[in-house]
Image (cartoon, rainbow, N blue to C red):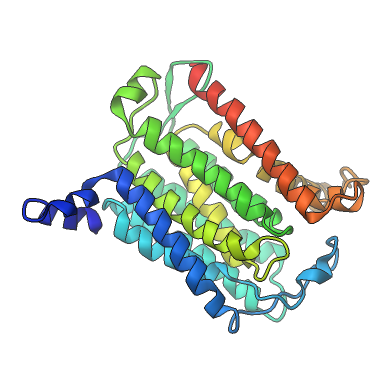
Amino acid sequence: MLVFLGTLFEPYYGPFRLFTSHLFLLLFGASVAFWLTWRILPVGFGWLPRDRGRAHAVNGHEAHGKPTGAGCIFISLCCGLAVCVMPAVGSHYLLLGLTWLAMVAGFLDDRSALPWGELRKGCLDLALAISAALILTWNTVPTLWLPFTTTILTLSRGGFVIMATVIIWGMINTTNCSDGVDGLSGTLVGIAGICLTALLYGVLGHADFARYLRIPYSSTAASWAICLFTFVGGLGGYVWHNAYPSRVLMGDAGSRALGFLLGVTIVKTGNPCVLIVTSSLLWINGGAGLLKLACLRLFRIHLFPHIRCPLHDYFRHVKGWSNTQVMIRFTLAQILITGVLFVILLKIR
C-alpha cells in the first residue's frame, strides 16, 4: 500500500520517494511494529486469558495466573502493518491470512477452559502447513539450491509440497515447545527472523549478488524480507514485556503463528538447510520433545528416559540453570551457530 502511494505521489512530493525504497519500508515496518506492540500490549493485559500453569514444567507455577495469549494482539498488529508496508504480491496476502488463522487457533486454545488435545492441535497445524505449501507452489516451478553444489534442483510439485509441509509443521511445533522460559522463544525466533531477513533482502533479493554467489534470484525476496522484519519488530515489543520476570506470555497464539511464518519463509528461500542455520536451537530444544513423544505414542519406546524435554527444562531441573542463564546461553549458542553456518551456507557452493 505504501509502495503504491510512493509511486503515485513521488512526482509531486519528493518525500513520498521513501515509500519506494525497500530498505526504508523494512526499517519503517519493524520500528512501527515495535512501538505499537510496546504501547498497546499492556492495555490488553486485563482482558487476556490467564495462564493455567504447566504441571510438568520446572517452575511451571510461576506462570500461573499471568496474562497469556498476547500473540493475538501483536500478531494482528503485525499482519495489518505488513499489508501496508510490503509490496503487493497476491500469495503473500494469502499466507499472511494463514498466519493470522494460526494465531486464532492458538488463542482459542489459550482461552479454553480445558487444553486442546495433541491430536486436535496437530491436525490443525497440518492443515495450515499443507495449505501454505500449496500456495507456495502457485504459478512457480519448485527449485532448490543447496551447499556443496552449484546445481539448481527442480522438484516435482508433490515432492515440494511434502517437503514444505514437514518444515512448516515442524517449525510450528518446535517453536511452541520452546516457549517455556521468559524471553527464550521470542529471542530465538527474533534471531532466526533477522538472519532470514538478511538472506532474503541482502542476497536473494539482489540480482548481482545472487548471481555472484550462484544462488537463484527471487523477485519477491525483498517483499518477504519486509514482511518478516515487521514481525521481528513486533516480537521485540513483546519481548520487552516478556523479559524475566515476565508480565505477559505470548501463548499458543504467538508461538504457533510465529513458527508458521518462520517455516513459510524458510521454504521461500529455496534451501531447506536454512532451517539448520537459523533455527537449530529451536529444533534441538523443542524437537527433542516431539521426537520423544512420537516414539512413545507410535512405538511405545521411551527415548532418552533421563532427559527432560523440552531441553530448557532439563538444564533448569538437572543442571540447576536459572531462567536467565538458560535464555542467555541458548541465545549465545544460536548466534554462534547461525554466524558460522551462514558463512558456510553462502561460501560452499
